[in-house]
Image 1 (cartoon, rainbow, N blue to C red):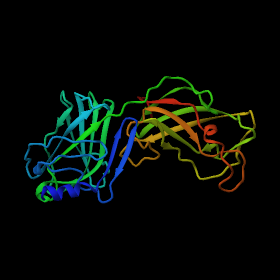
Image 2: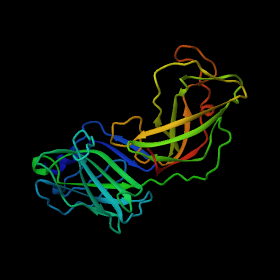
Image 3: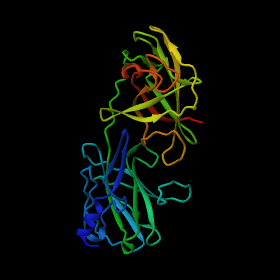
Image 4: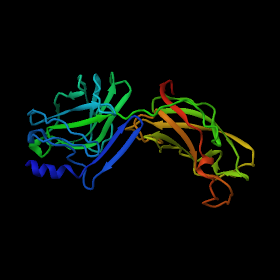
Length: 330
């Protein structure tokens, strides 16, 4: 494959790039293969949308090997040294089957650069790749992650023998710990721990709704379970990252008279990434600043969908609070 033909094949890709508090899907029409530039062409990889380029690797791996290289940097471009780089190779459908995946670990140098030893695979094999950077060790806080790269081994089989990435961390949202007292929904704390269990994260958030609207409020529910979502503050935007799964039934509406109140709780469970457990967070690292939003808090009620007119978003939204991942779940 000539460099000019290779450049043409790099364009039609889909990349999912994640960092703590950040999720972005970049879709370029076409297939997902060839999200790279092969070392053997002396070309340079560019991850579109990240402004990423890396030096071409001066290597000539064995025909049945694949290596990974690149840099880890902070949001402002400063290098992150001693970051643990974890490369995971899984089946072409990107499913994670215990014992069936291959993991390679290396450490970034003083300039944030890293390079893995070549990984071995059957010639012509297609694999799904995830590359993550963690602070200090493979069990430390996540810095950034690229996943869902579908590639084929090696160059002699029409595939590649090296892949370069830039892992850029996104700055965490500052948290001043103050309470937004104007919110109709108020949580019973401003800080919660997402406990890590065998299947996923869990937490319980208590909340109280004060009906400061001009009339009775009606809350659609199924045996008390209500439609609630969690939104995370990411780059100054509130993005939905978790939605409760409720039973499919319709109970009588919960009524809250004007100037009345209603207490409830949010039972959060989110399956780990790479599993088929639902519901789950749509981001790799769920730690951060959140608000809860209720979907069906209405100013009027009818027994058939759409049931009534929702209260304004501000009246269905909680104060800000913080979730932090920690040990101790079931």
